[in-house]
Length: 312
Length: 250
Image 1 (cartoon, chains in turn yellow, orange):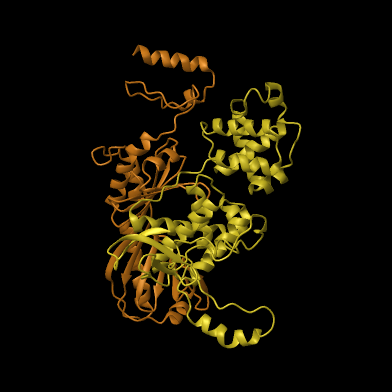
Image 2 (cartoon, chains in turn green, blue):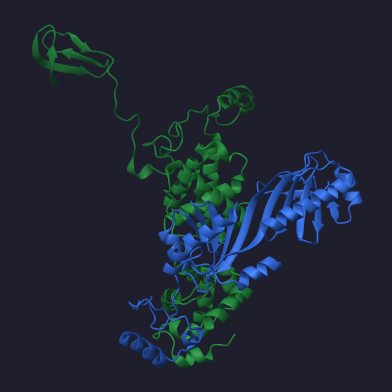
């Protein structure tokens, strides 16, 4: 029951909506004001306990603004059982003929998603990597490049931009076949392309040993005390003139902290968890040893314990 | 070599090099057109100091395998290497000064002439000059990368040095923590010198000070920083305190 302006009665009258025919009818003179109205309520009923895998409230996945049409797709479905060859022969061909322009993009996004799943990265980083890849792809000059290395480098840059850097070795471990050198080159290339595109917008701070501390320590199963001590130690170590890669310093600090605790980890375990070679950890230990009393916090280890540390 | 020894012994011209340090040139790459088609096989067979391996594959930066179709020839004096191509173009590398590079290129052209080809000496051009020097103090690369982020690229995981791409003159500098600098990309010697003079004040700004009191740098107003290495190595804080007080009295 509602009011509408009826053109015959020339005034507002009571209007009846007839659901069976979809007509809006004036109750005084019987004039049909609107016919074939479209019902915009939901097609089917949804029950709270029934959602399971196919939640009928939504149709399709979330829209992806990076794809040209937002990720909409209409596909010819295969019927359940039987007549498989019929579909793959004619209908299937017709569907695949009209190729969507984003096929390479979708494949690349899938690869990035696989890599980020392997590393356990959050969706924010994955989306940022997708965005970076799209921006690079828009400039057509990246055709001949090694795709794996390019995607791995997009992920690496995304991690850095979100302040959760991953070492190149970690990215290497999930990228299929890209070497550290190739990823490094691809990363330089991407930074240059993004810089060309909109003038020096790529913001990436230098990596610090402290960024990786939490992750390396939890991979090794160190207790909270040790983790805190390691983080403090790495902060202090930045003041000293130690000419080593931050990852090597992190690994050496972990080695020292674990040697001081009851739960001594062998060099091999630290090497596997951090990706730093054992020889490098030993050399970094040699470099850190002169400053060890100033780096390790007092509450964690006393002077005598430090004396017990083996001299390199 | 003789002229280099002479340069080292002369005092540095502070009007031209206000920093007091002159970068030494390490490598000059030059090209010259011999202006005649060459037969690489016969050159390789006849010359004593040449190698030619047409089946050898060379990996370029763009990661595509290509044939390396040139003769590699070396001479002892000046100690240089030349790549000689069938088109008659030649690249001469390894010389330590511009005159030596030209002299070496002429020697190679002479060798080709002696082998029977009508070689000329057209369009000699120096393509790249590489220089290096030492500022003798450690540098805080991270601070430099942060403040000059538009020009610097510092990735300690990938390369231990900071890559500084100077715009004017267009030179690439590799800056290392130890204070050693490599300058490359110059076409004339003066570009190297100018680039170094431009970067020197920046480097002094990001000098890594030795830790006496545990944090940062202390500036002493009179502009004196202790250059004495043996003072720096004294860990006894008593001595350091004495020096600090001494400065205050000045």
